Image 1 (cartoon, one colour):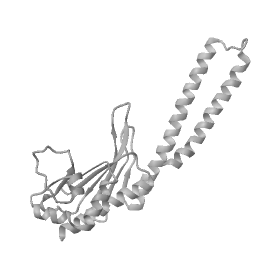
Image 2: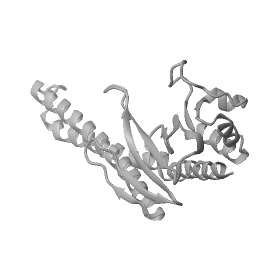
Image 3: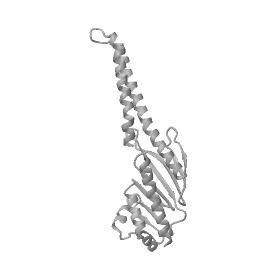
Image 4: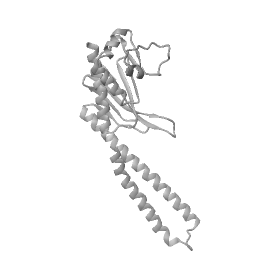
Length: 232
């Protein structure tokens, strides 16, 4: 992403430089005693403003087009469906990967002045987790709701844990590969939950090619260990 932004800034700066040079050459013969006529100054300001708007718009399109291409290529490599975004809707990747259903899209957070685009991932496990195990972020559920304490300081700190079968839930979460994958996932995303055999998580920003592989690989690893732990 940083490389594309650097490359994209080159034509933007070149365009602005050319626009300023052209404006100077255009209005230079009209100079009167070292000062342009007032109406020409207004036109010059409008010209500069439009140049900036067009330049920034072109730069933004260049970066987003590269990210969209990365999403499309990722979907093709994984044998998934890709649907391009349109106006205020983000792109969508969906389909089955390694026996689990994956859906990924973008969501806008914040108000008009602080709008931010995040990436959401949803993974549906092939079967229910025993005891209807539910994992939610700490603080997302009221204090009156059941919260199983596993004795694992890190998991108890990050998650509210619920289940109809408390001993089984503790056994599942104590499975070393699952615990490691769960903590790894929590460290890479901004929000996480497991409800009704569906893993939902959200990542900050519009993920580029490398981030797509990393986040999707992380959540798929977690899904597979959840399935393994449920069978143990």
